[in-house]
Image (cartoon, rainbow, N blue to C red; front, side):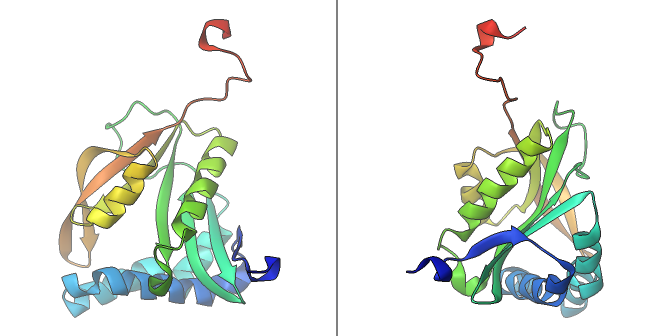
Amino acid sequence: MTATSQPHLRLATPADTAALADLARRAVSAKFQHLYKPEDFATFMEAAHSDAKVAKEIADPGMRVAVIEEAGALIAFCKLVLKSTLPTGHSDARAPLELKQLYTDPARIGGGLGARLMAWAQAQAEEVGADEIQLTVYSENAEAQRFYHRYGFAKIADIEFWVGNHCDPEFLYAKPLVPETNGLSKSEQV
């Protein structure tokens, strides 16, 4: 593999809107569409993954959206909300960051793209001074739960997630972040 064929991680730009929305719709459909009535799924997809919604997220200064691109095609992405919008009262975090979505092209799952995006998300959280990364995961999505456990996330609450008129049981996960200590041991910190 040459250096030019290596998938490239970068921030999304407005020019990525249509491709990013398409990737999101394909990834979500492949994993979850079979669970819902067509009208519920269509309502959810329009609200969460339309071109207009994606364009708004890319432009939002309170969000960061990263994509992984290979040969001109988007193959994975991650969306972060710099100040979590998830339910409060389940954690002692004062400045949590929300990992909103992390998806890979269904044909590329298992190739390390998720790990690259998770490393990026962690670095972003540290850069903005977040003390915790929070996310939600479908209660029956054991694959995603295993993925997040590998990175130190743990379930902190049961919550709900709505897909159209359908309510799913969802888990709120969190990973506390250790503040930067400037190389000092705990005993040396004031």
